[in-house]
Every structure is written in structure tokens, then in C-alpha cells.
Length: 260
View 1 (cartoon, rainbow, N blue to C red):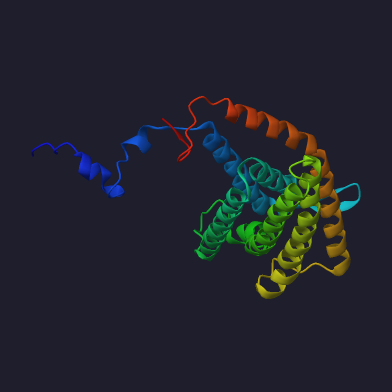
View 2: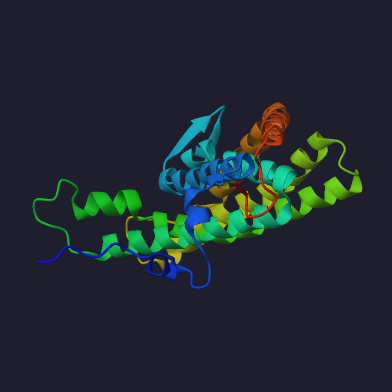
């Protein structure tokens, strides 16, 4: 059998007709693009793990909190950093990417839950349903609350930036997060833990009563704004560190975020 002929340049570039992809394939991403990729990855990773662990609750200082509260504030810090360094359009693009990921997770969990369970499966159907029964509702509620709160966060952040002419980073960091976290907390707890259990037909899930709902909303919001206030120094340090590192990149190209 004859050996395959070497791939020619036209065949190799057929993925993007009319463009030479050799430059893209061999180029080293600029520091700006590498930093953006890491921030976007941290954002999406925090969003995914938040949805995965949101069904477990614990009590801290007498307040009921979802375990998802541990990672979720990181998403707002990440979008604030992206807004500060890259602008509103880039921040909105990451928010939309997180929405796509949430839709994907919902579909995968729904298919996995609907699939028949093998008799010798280490995780039986009941256990799987207890752990992941709330996840579609949590993800659904999170997606709606997430889109609303993240876009609110980005818009308010940009509003304060323009109003103060780029001064007072602490004001736009906290001013945007405090309000957007309130929107997010009320919406996600209501949709995921009150509305969804009433419509999903799953006996493993039950809707929260008003007093429990009130306690969770208040506790989670209080925790979120506390974390938001505490992460302000981190926001300053990360912004300074990233902008200095990016500006010191001697080979950063202005086009396409790649280095020559």
C-alpha cells in the first residue's frame, strides 16, 4: 500500500479558505490573551462547581447557606477584572460563554438521569437522583439569575467607571457587585428551590417554605456582600499585577492578540 502523500499547503489551509493558518498555528498568544483565557477559565470553572455543589446546605453564624456560595463570588471578581482590563464587550462575551456551558451541563445531567441504571452500577438511580435531582432546577435558576445579575454587574461597573472618569476602583467594584448579588440571590433561590420542586415531579425534591427561603436569601446575600467587600484589595492587587505584566510584554501585537 503506497504511503500517503504529504499534506500540501492548500489542503492544510482548507479549514479556513483564503487564509494562511501557519501564522495562527505557530504564533504565541500575547500576555493579554493568556491572561484573558485564564480569567475566563476561572469564571466558568467557578460557575460550574457552584451549580454542582449548590444542593448541599450548611449553617454559618446561624444562617443557612448553600455550598455553592463558596465559589460563586469568584465569578463576579473575574468579570470585574475582565471589565476593568478588557472592557464591557469582552466581559459580556464571557458571561454568554458561561450561559452556553450551563445549558450544556443541564442537557448532560438530564440525559444521564433519564438513562436506565445498570443493575451493578456503583451509584444507584435513587442516590443519583438525590444528588442531581435538584441540579437541573439549580442550573435553570442559575442561568436566568446569572444572566440577569452578570449583565447588571457589567453594566453598573461600566456606569461607575464612566461617572468617576476611571477613578475609585473600589466604588465600581463594590457598587456593581452589591446590587447584582441581590438580584442573583433572590432569583436563583426562588427559581431553584421554590418554583422548580413544584413543577419537576421529582419526589426527592420539595419546595422551601417562606421562612427557610427568607433565611437562605438573607444569609447568602450577607455572605456574598461580605466576600465582595473583602475581595476589593484582591481586585486592586490583581488589576495592578495583570496590567503591569501585560504592558511589559515586548512582543504583544495589536492585531488578533498574537505575538509576531
